[in-house]
Image (cartoon, rainbow, N blue to C red; front, side, top):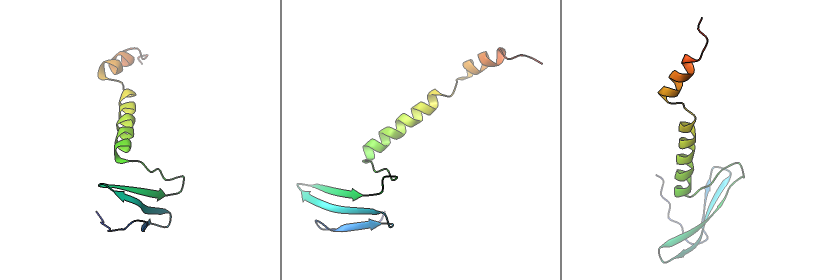
Length: 79
């Protein structure tokens, strides 16, 4: 992990397209602003993890279990 020390209103540039700026520092919290192109998604970690879990659950729900596969295969024409 790359670590920076920044003061209020200072920025970090990522690549040529992403700008991170420290907006406020108070009572143990830091408020940051992120400027990025619309094609780049920016999420808080807990939101990203929730999206990831939902996507994984959606994929699992589309995979038939062994009993369903056996049932389907028994209905296929033989020959």
